[in-house]
Length: 322
Length: 248
Image 1 (tube, each protein chain N blue to C red):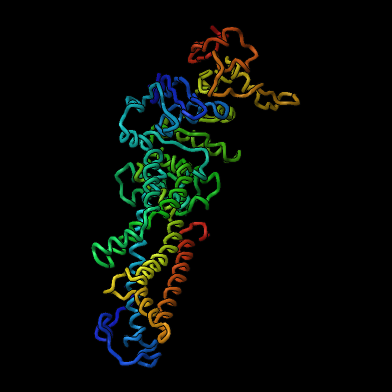
Image 2 (cartoon, rainbow over the protein chains, first blue to last red; image 1 turned 90 degrees about the horizontal axis):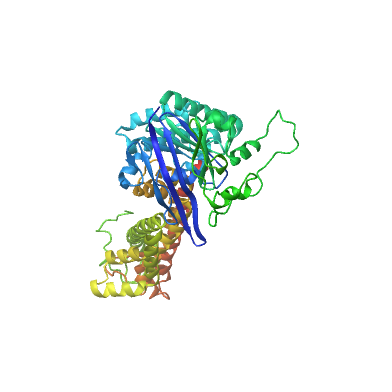
């Protein structure tokens, strides 16, 4: 068994707004193991990004606040450590790749300049070493003629190239853990395949751990070692990729998988899960999924389901299996 | 800064005395004023004073305004509130009263006039920069650089300020002629430093004898006009040069 590089325990991140308290993340637990890729899957607004931002302490406060739980990176308590220490962990130990590289790069500096600054922020290197490193990184993420690309401004690059430059920037200090927030959502399919290929190589060559946030099962099956399905700020199910895709237990997971188009099936219409994600200000009692669940029974309305082990490393939060 | 002229040719304090005013000849191309001082020499000497006032006062105002605006926008919350209310107070504070007070206490010294204009003139800049920085703050690259370990000071200096630089240049180019005019106005109403011959001072001197020596008032006026125009062109050029998109 590999060691856990990141341990999240009972994380609760709430947003205190005028309309009420939004429980964006309401008590989730997971471990991220060394050189493992854990995919966080769920609909829009289910708390995937908030989870990622909580790990790095980037929740805007006010209105947001982490009201409970623990996050450990190795032995460092990320929620309790001093801000200075957290700042040195950000970028150097844990880096993040954002969804929209267009807006995640500073428009007034060349990408080379931005990577160099990033390198110099955490490492004691001179300008020439930093430049060499930056060009090496641009090459590693598959940017053609990296010496030329070094002096390009973000708007001179295509969307896929920008996403690569963003990844190169986050890799600049060789972090052990990479949090990728939907890095393939804003790019087209061929670029998506190439970006996923980069992540594969990072895992194989650098032994990096990756927390990969996405809402696409196609991407998940491509890159994930394990999958955690989130629903309305809580975990629904967590299992290895093949186990979850072949043997889904939670009605929400099965529903999600049914929504996928299948080329071998002869059907006119795609299936969908009836209803919408509940309001997080005034959530339903018990299991948050019960209003949309066709298998819901009486207890689902009253009690929040506890984690239930249903197989090797397969945990589901559903009363049907108790 | 600007042109220098030989002290022997022209002394602004004393000047050469000529019995009557003249409108132009080889020795005095722009003529002289009613005290017989050469107008061209006075304009050149005044340019130095007026431009110094414009640049230094604007420099102080822009630096303060940018720092306060960006800090206010980036930190938000209570800091933002406190800084913006302070800006409101500064905006409503009668700047002329302060100036009269300063002139009364310390005497009409150019350094104090520049400091007062600079230290009271940052409010508009702070407001404009803040509103621009507020929208920048929510952009993802700020979050990204925070996620990659940048400190607040670094984000303000390396990410926010370079992104508002084009706005700052526009404000500065509009503000420099404004400050020059403000100093001219002060001189005109008699609050200026009488030991230096700024364009405003020359204008004031010329206005008193407009019927006989009209050119004395018109020449500094034309210089002020050309300076304002020149700074506007400079601003346009700099803004284009700073915008990475325009070089493609």
